[in-house]
Image 1 (spheres, chains in turn blue, cyan):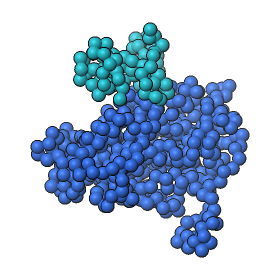
Image 2: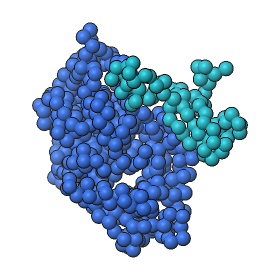
Image 3: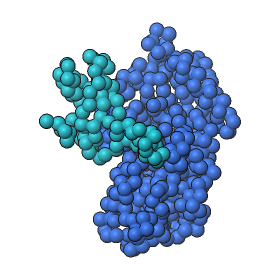
Length: 416
Length: 84
């Protein structure tokens, strides 16, 4: 692997940037691998990387229907945080945030990580009580959360001029999560792909998995793709919203529903907001990117959806809510809009698990899975290599449904 | 925006309705089925890439519950298998 450094940049500048090595190879597709990972997104690539690096697996293929990093890793709002609710969730996300902060060094790829604090704007007393409770749980597990007054909130976010005493939902105070940050989503996909490739992982783009193949004993035997059959004793499904579409080809039913989540981006403006602003009672959140764009996210569409676009009603509701707190944003022009479909489990917590089909693993139910990419990849690699769940994710297997031992999570974007 | 056919009010805007989730399998007798089948009934909902039957509540209208078939890839309200 060609290392990136100031020296390599200077040397390549002298040769007109014509001699950079390709970040990853495009090898021919083999008929069999030890492990096949479906989906070259964040979780698929991170799992491949840690399988090769931490668990010594070499014969791995990542199969991607479209192009590398073109799914939900390109369709999120790059918010990295660990302010969750449940004892099972917080240590997992604390680990993930710590891994993200070290990822530039780990992968020799500039993640443009910007640790910039998340501020929750609280507008109802029930939310205030819930977040205070969350603060006490987070204190136990080494995450940071602290209350601030309305005056301090307005001092930190000068653009927050709405929500006064006469508003329908006056601002009551705020909560500050200093561990939160943002980074560059493409760099995460490309960095993991380059790192995995250097360790011998093969990445095959434009290779669509059409169905899972089971052997005579019922165990997984491989996958059928548009480029032919690929045999493997272990198959990992890391395809976000299409999880049930893929697993149903092996006759496996899962407690997942696919939803569409919306985001949009404004024109770039001068630095105005230096924290991630989350307004759970109004139903939107945003941060300002390094380029100056406001990156805005809202609520999911009502009902299941496999569409990757924005719904007019959801868009209007989100903008209306935003303008009630940030009336100056009325002058902002919006540049791009998109949606991503993701699946949510019955209890809103992720599923990283073996399945009833021997050799078939899933990583699904990621509602805000971007922040979980490093820890998700590491712990899933542990499960695939060792056959036993990693302690950080032992609560997130399919076993919890068998015993109705749910991890009801309310720290996700949407409180159900 | 969906235009949802309410049996009492006719076609009305989606914003008058609340989504009530997909129509699930009939509740089995818990004593008559295995634990696995009972857990599946409790947790697994249909998640097709295509038509799904779902409940909607005309909460900001006449208050009735209705079911319709909607395509999850196009969002169009479509004819269900049992529709006349």
